[in-house]
Amino acid sequence: MFARSGALSGARRRPEPNWGDLVVELKKPGVTMAILWEEYRGVHPQGYGYSRFCDLLRGFQRRLSPTMRQEHVAGDKVFVDYSGKKLGIVDARTGVIREAEIFVGVLGASNFTFAEASWTQALPDWIGSHVRMFRFFGGVPRLIVPDNLKAGVNKASFYDPDLNRSYGMMASHYGVGVLPARVRKPRDKAKVENGVRFAQSAILGRLRNQTFFSLAEANAAIRDAVDRINDHVIRRLGVTRRHLFETVERPALAVLPEDYEFAEWRLARAGVDYHVEYDGYFYSVPHGLIREQVDLRATSRTIEVFHRGQRVAAHQRRYGGRRHGTNPDHMPSSHRRYADWSPERVRRWAATVGPSTEGLVIAILANRPHPEHGFRTCLGVLRLFRDLKPSQAEAVSARALEIGAFAYRAVAAIAARQAAAPARTSTEPAAIIEHSNLRGPGYFH
Image (cartoon, rainbow, N blue to C red; front, side, top):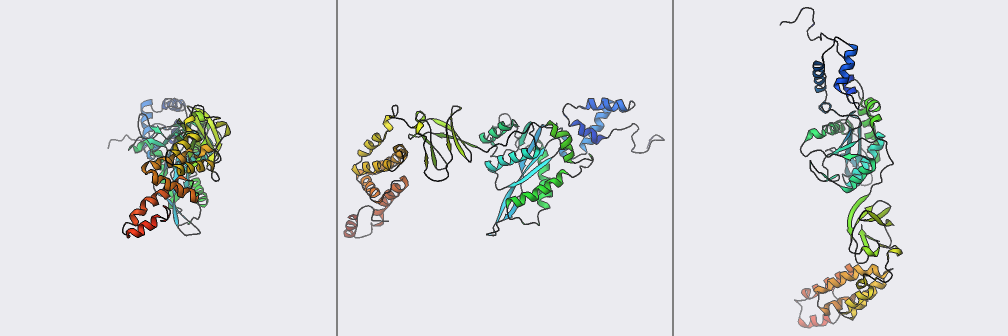
């Protein structure tokens, strides 16, 4: 109502800078509003004062997308998460549709986006997606901000989150920190939430009418969709995500090391046969570590064993053949310290049950490349026999020797059949039961 004459409605009385350019400049390391204002006043001495300049710049930022309201320094953070919706992939042979997960990573300052499909959210796929994301960026930011996914975070905590060890080793390889988003705090990961929405619209929405028959085929289409996202001009800023990435973010990223090879870490305890078990196969450790807790590091090619931070054994990973991998240097020459776990000690223990049991133990030990490989089986059989009468244990051992059953499961199956045999024949005439018992414990199958 009281506008001064000569001033158009809605027009600024003082010269204004290009606010979009200033928002981009503010993302660069070390750039502050005070520096930008000084540069502005250098060009426009009659321009806005510092406080009014800051108000106008903040007002422009508030009109941008929600993720722009947070100030992210170039090269500082990458936000990662999975899309809630999945992509269907058809098995060309069976016609069965299998759903794939969509992994999304978004850099904080430039909004530069990476996305790919993987079969699961399990640890190998989770870490593999990070490796390919860093390769896509060509560098490494200072921090990763994931959601509290179980593959990355064992226990969520604002003060001291418990990271999965394998995920932590990957982060250590790249020299990047992990700062999980707080539980039920969506603003902590607003950047990736926005990236997930882009993935669902620009990827899943655009690809909804396409049929994919392999994960590779789906990822090729996703790469094209991601390129479309990164080359799209951001409203108000007037530049693309790729331009921001190339000019602002990439120079601030740390140097990319060699690709990390996925490794799973597990705790294990060396058995009395100085072997540790991983995925159904046994690998030797120095015999002095019997009963000690060790750390296993398993890759697709190797199994490494660590004790108190020192590597004590390394083996080629086994996927077939013999179940035991034994380094001769790990074998004790005479079991000096652990003589009570020698083959002779196990044989004497079996002899207390009966001659057939002793014979079964001798056969089990002789059936292994090294007698120590049979310790676990023998101990399992002897513990199984604790719940049987000596006569029953002897009958089971005799039957196992007769048919060559030298594995624990086979012996346990014979014992179970013998225990079940009287129950199945309890309704038969006494003469028939007596006659059938003459056939031995292996008669009933």
